[in-house]
Amino acid sequence: MVDYSELKKKFPAKKKVALETKNKKASKERIRREFQAKKELLASPLPKMKRGLVFYAVVIMGLMMLGSLVLSATGRGGKEPVSRKQVNARKSMDALAVALGRYKFHVGHFPSTEEGLSALTNITPKVKGWFGPYTKRIVPDPWGREYVYETRSEGGNPILYSCGPDGRMGSPDDIMPDQALFDEPFRDTTWTNHWVPYNLRGIVVAPDAATKKAIQEEVKKY
Image (tube, rainbow, N blue to C red; front, side):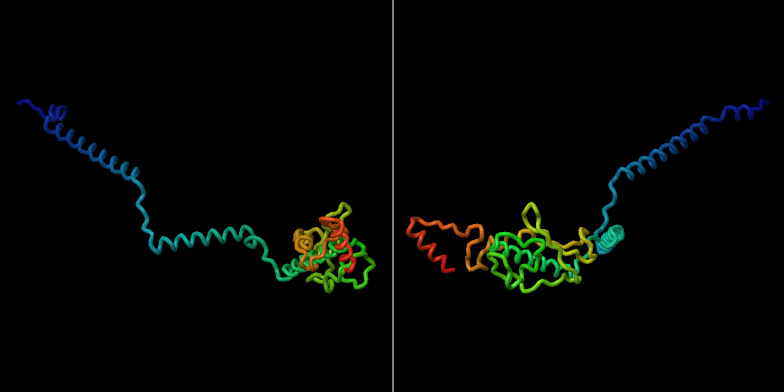
């Protein structure tokens, strides 16, 4: 008899080969489907987060953490708060600026550097046109130091400021008045009972000579 066992090993049956081929195709198809499913999952948008109490709590916590980081990075969280002394110093500066403006309204110029702020309170000054006092008294700033006052050689508003908490001239905490207040007495003259300002004194505008003479005679009474 002929032994076909060795030939069977070399040439397997067609049925067995077909089964193996089918299994390979099924395996490839399964891998293809898994790959397609993962591809679609990655391409799909992320699921929306439900905005409940937990969501808002997380957002608030995040903002608080961000704020704490900003505060720690800036040291004190921004500008240093203004103290009551600084507020009072600014109020004094503004009041002195108005008083100096009234002095100029009557006299025609600001007090000299040598005369200083005391020219606002002197009862019998030797200055023509002086009609004060323009303030009750001159007191030191809230830190017990004198205010810096100096006129400018080129004219304009005088230099007036407090050295502030550190007591050093020209430092960032110096306190100055509102510059517009030096001219306030000229914009609103109700405090003078409507006296004319210094630079307009002696000027009479009238429709005729007779009216002008009458006004001049009236002015002499004052």
